[in-house]
Length: 220
Image (cartoon, rainbow, N blue to C red):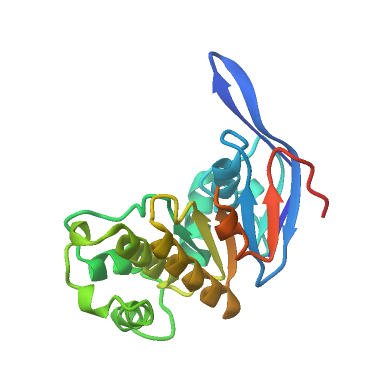
């Protein structure tokens, strides 16, 4: 499902390249649940953004769902991400002034990709599964932190992606909300969806079936 071979990524700082990932390699089979951990600055979010196509690499191979992302243009990567993946950002990245339902529907509005049922029916289904039906018409700003993250997960699930990428999805939540969100991810994974999650939390990492710690050597 996901393959990285000798990936290098650096950022320019004062006119000089500063490496973040050096000769990084990994594999993830379909249905895997992988937690990416490591100290601040170890490249966790950079790796996640590379895998979902938000960032390019300096060199190396990135293959996701049979497609070589490292050979794609930025526009091609964007199209691939919209069609094949769901992304849950740390802050939810939801649209203020939109209702919960409108936020969940955004992937359809942006791609017009057809699935096996009308998009609004699918959105209602996902909201029901996540116990958000009663909040569907509420302004997103009126939700608690945990409710907002559930709405972000619902949006990521709308078009039935093969892979979910999640960047610190519980970073700003209390312990109860964190557990609820992680149980949702566990249920999603058990249905066959591949999950790649960045986290600082050992508790959250324990939900994964594989942990990759950046900054140390990971043997495949």
